[in-house]
Image (tube, rainbow, N blue to C red):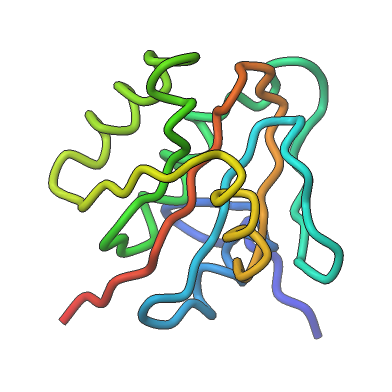
Length: 137
């Protein structure tokens, strides 16, 4: 019998996201992406995109971060130059978390190692982040 996540009292009510977060181990990665990031074959996709801007990238990031211990985030260098507001929002949210900046092509390669890519409705260029799981102890 499947249990509905609507019974959860706090946090994310998306069943698939809750399942992924619960299955993460130390150093596992999860990518949260804009609507256009190519998702490699073989990587699980949770597609939240409904239409342009729905849901917004940062809404998804905040929801996942509320439940996942994150020790490092990875963003593309291009995010800092093309979409600096996205980079600033991520730096503010993850102020105590190590930030790694890589070329966008490298970020796309790293998504192939993610347990999951969560696709949002975000249309802002380079609004992508890889979350590296930490441990709570």
